[in-house]
Image (cartoon, rainbow, N blue to C red; front, side):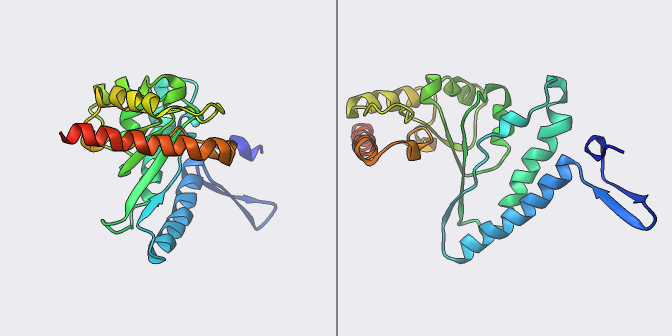
Length: 212
């Protein structure tokens, strides 16, 4: 029997008394979620107040048929994510992160992950995710990336400030986080530090103007 094609959890007697257990992706994911939950709780016990649980490639596992998206994937993948952070204290802030994909057609499912904050890779996609966030009445606080880190170019403070105002047209200011797109490890210090300094300066400038 090709066990890779077995659908469901089974116990089958094979070769006498040998028991072979086969788990579905759903059950494997639940077991992984429980293991990662232990790691999250260890971080919390160590005094960490903000924990990021990445689920960057959530969309990549979607079935080919859209009609199967929920029944065969999202209906168990999203609860598995919630299981990972289900035991933390209310005072522990849970962040997550999305990249590599377009998120518009699963934006409500992403909201249902019940993280406190989610950062999106957005600048590479020209902030198109903002329309989905706006139209879905997205409840989770979010940080759409304000510049593309995949380019060695250093964005100016004014450029980032302009990006922030674009974001504020579609999002409640109280729910906006300011961050770059993901992947800073691909950049060197000579590019990273000036870019982040400009990001911080732009965020401060926008806060100052909004406070007037």
